[in-house]
Image 1 (tube, rainbow, N blue to C red):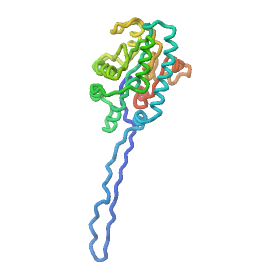
Image 2 (cartoon, rainbow, N blue to C red; image 1 turned 180 degrees about the vertical axis):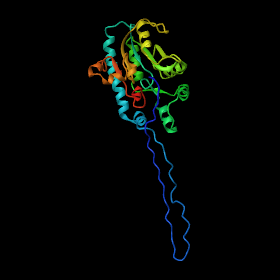
Image 3 (cartoon, rainbow, N blue to C red; image 1 turned 180 degrees about the horizontal axis):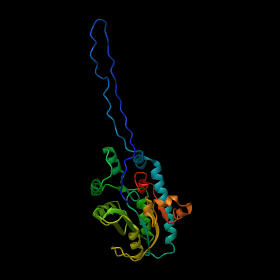
Length: 254
């Protein structure tokens, strides 16, 4: 998904111990005593959204739940299709790859997202698979499907992204990154997968499922859909599967 980092309100605390002054009759006041304990420097803690993503059982449970539901859907869809004729499309960041360490490092440093630090993070190749992602991708392949990763990591960051996928055994057939300096709209890349016009030599493919953590990871949708009736979300849990990401997203700009 499109990368943007918002530093959520952090907690800070401080403790100062004030010494008492000893006084004597007919004698000058004694000088202040040294503090009996060191002053604790203010500490900036990670935002709660990062802590939930990294440390909660609920985060793992939800990812496994969504990927299991997506697997069951794909198994049903694959039953009536010839191998090599269909595909699933997934976002990369916070859908397949966990970048919460980058978020944590920026939060601890008191710094927001910026393009330079993000490129450096991608080059470190330290993102790891999210729960359920590897098994889902492998199952799609075993059923005869193709895997297209449509990410807004830039073309410059694509080789490092592909290296992370290979290092962790994450199956994919096409990695469609955002052109350098190009728009973040994923629609044209979704269409390229369906029409068979990607540079990876894939034929036209029927996309049976989309997975992502941002509403913009799904065809034709934006944050504006939140104002629509529930019927506008009918594809979710059927063809569309959304993963939780409380750390950043297009929701921040509304």
